[in-house]
Image 1: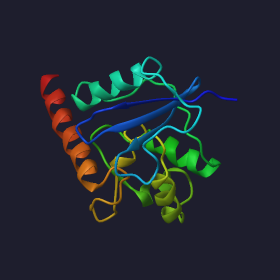
Image 2: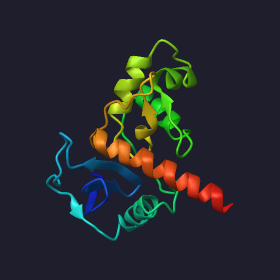
Image 3: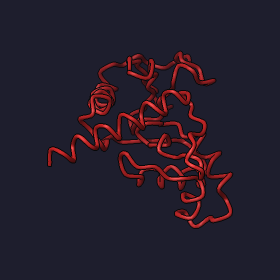
Image 4: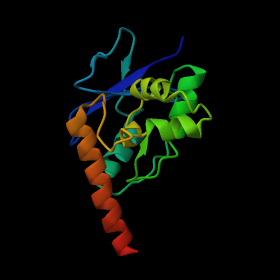
Length: 167
């Protein structure tokens, strides 16, 4: 049986609940989500196992990290995995639409299914589902809430501009 580890951390967009196993990070849960914000029976509280995740998220929130270097283990269908992999290619501080993602994974008529898979992303922020917006430019659903999504996009835009100016 796989040992599951968890920890919690504060963030500028609210408390985050982190879940991992020995192979990698499985989930990041927001306080507003329907998913439980408490461990299941048998899970081990392990701040040490999740320290690299907390450190990289803290660096990201501080505007000092644009990419993550963590082993990830999101659990999902083959289609969901394809969508989540495509999400990882969205550059920092840029956005895309569900339609553009469906084109990217060669499923041009599947933008609704792409939206559903995006909504089931178990590792938000690190797999940047917050960078997907409506085709008309509006913010669409986000597990952490639209205010958190807007904060993430604005933080990325501000730090991207600052980092570019320093180069």
